[in-house]
Length: 284
Image (cartoon, rainbow, N blue to C red; front, side, top):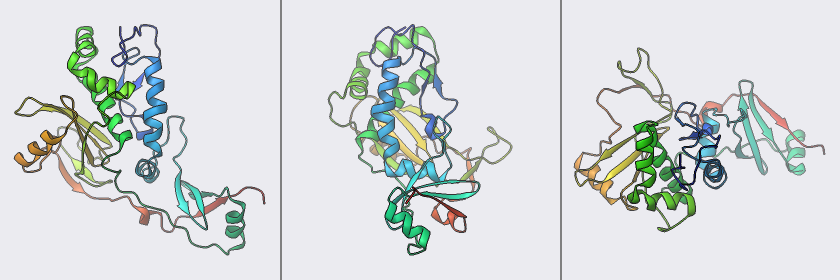
């Protein structure tokens, strides 16, 4: 077996690649050992996923939705209470970690009373970390979709038309930026009903699909927490998807008629009002 990114032999590799990281709540969309080699898996964790999770939006959305990292630790967000502090939360309330001794003293003596918790509703629409993550996920989702059939693995790994996006993700090769399209199609906390999926309403953490345009361009569409991200596997430009949206009245490929939005429970900073607050401070 060869790694789908570096094309090196990966028969003895032990890494199981998560298409969408565990730290975004993915437990089931994974690739078998060897599809992505240990070296590439480690590279993606350090060079793509870690910078992605440090972006204000992804830190904020994981905090709001109580998504733990792959080690089971809660996500910390940044707040302002006399200075920058780290904020965590659990069923008992909010926890403030103040590393600055002056801020800690002000909290304890009551001279600092108000905290600002920024709300980040979307990531920047032209971020290199988001771009590389989407391109990585696109190739891995393609493997996931066709299944672990060796002839399909070989076809995708050796397909010359995928080398440009492959090398962009793994080695930072040209182009300098792979364009993507971003827009919100539903809100965090929205609940849906589809009798083909479940007899009860449900939230959608993430979903993805592929489709060909009439011009034969292959697109990958990934929705995370209501934000639709789209990249082309055929070109580093995204203008073809913008044209497709116009032709289809702005209705994306994952916005099906079978799925009905039945309830909206937006998750925002207001949901934290009234929570008990605990302060963790260094010794002063």
